[in-house]
Length: 223
Ligand SMILES: [Zn+2]
Image (tube, rainbow, N blue to C red; front, side, top):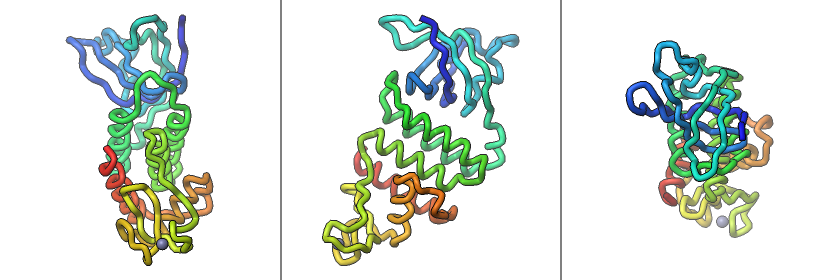
């Protein structure tokens, strides 16, 4: 069966002399690996198409008893070459891509993650990279079965939430003092993002860097 799908290029690994194993996040297949034969030959139609973060249309034949398909054709939909202007953001996307490749099962559709990844790349173009990075991280944690436990109150009922507990992924008050002090804005910002109300908030680069570190701590605690 011929499959046409759209996908983001996540990684390429050299295979033999001129071929590649390609890692993508696709709309209908989730994380997938493809054999791309002759990808590095001088006249290969894949040259320049299968580059990191490019959005591409892929064609392949689905067969039984294998999960490593051969890529028949790939066409560029959109490159993200402009990201090279933002090396810091590119590095953070690279890190989130690594977490994704390590923690999400292959060959299972993950539509929420695919959509969130496209928001991420679009968000960087629209200068909303701080919210876009955090939103993708929250979606990734959700897909990994580690969703943050976002509630409007501390477990004691207090409305103040200035601590984050990396043990269970919840926010709490300064009376209970469980976990790391993060200030009240982090819980408010992440609550808004998780509730698709990102438009109502602003997150600075410094705040974003702080939140990312805390979320990485949470991830480390559980992986
Ligand atoms: Zn409390």
